[in-house]
Amino acid sequence: MSAITKEKKANIFANFGGTAKNTGSIEGQVALLTERINHISEHQKLNKKDFSTSRGLMQLVGKRKRLLSYLSKTNLQGYRALIEKLGLRK
Image (tube, rainbow, N blue to C red; front, side, top):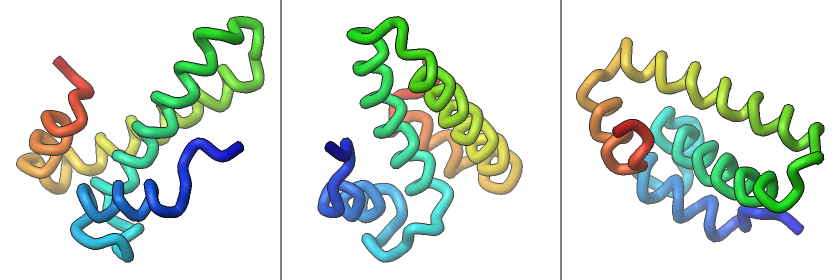
């Protein structure tokens, strides 16, 4: 069963990317990755020996880190607002 439905995905892009059709926005992509990371993290808590999922989780975290790094270099105010909105860094 998929963790993210079409409606949920459209809602995430509407909240963070401006519109539901703006799937290329960095903010929307980071928000979607964060949603997937949170879902997989819950799965990992229950299935500690699921190493393939653990590897996939690390890949998602790396991709999110690269996107956030790009966003911080190009739009620092947008980066800070996104971090605050998602609650990523304390």
